[in-house]
Image (spheres, rainbow, N blue to C red):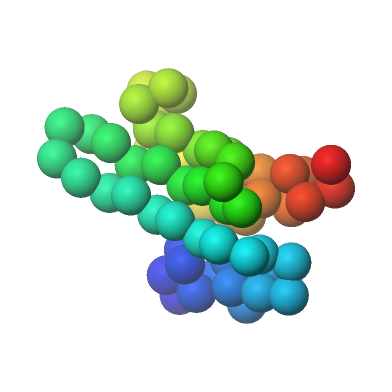
Length: 62
């Protein structure tokens, strides 16, 4: 399952907007409801399996 599909499966009612931005230069960012929840450029690594879903879940509790 793709990351986008996994996020929508788990959070579709809560997510107003979802943006995944892969690009050249190592950029991979996940933004949910205008909040950056994961950035490969900031962390310097790929997200672990389930990490982004966990970060989205945490951001939804705020």
